Image (cartoon, helix red, strand yellow):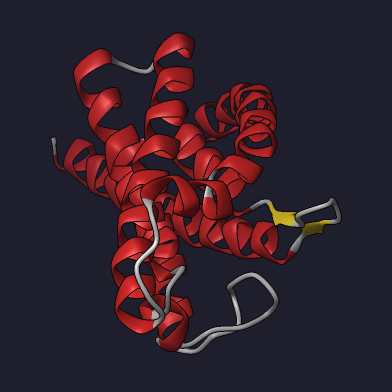
Length: 193
């Protein structure tokens, strides 16, 4: 009987260690994705791809923790944000709401996973909903700060500056994340087996 208890404790500790390793690894993946800038008429990074990947592969709880750690590192000044920068100033600026929105995006994905399960269609839906949540939070933040600091602008103007140029690249990121998530999730599940 004692051997069973010891084995259970060992398995539990191993799983917690693996969880921490996966969370840290995906916080790094998000940072690396943020550093990759795709040149286009309006350049974009792969940050949202990293967010989708973290939650899609690790699940809601661990994926959200990876996003939180990434954001805390950025707030602490570690250069994990797009453009190899970091610091609290990037979070309180006009576009800081989109960074904070990453956490709400992950939480929305986790919520959908909790209520609807981890089926592929739920993951796709949760990525779309998470993106909309990030867009909404970031745009509201942008409207408030831009209006306070510079002057009032309309919602349509804010959307045309901050959201519309990124819709197609973000849709492509969702498709890519869905493909990569399926493959990585199998590897991680096999590792945990």
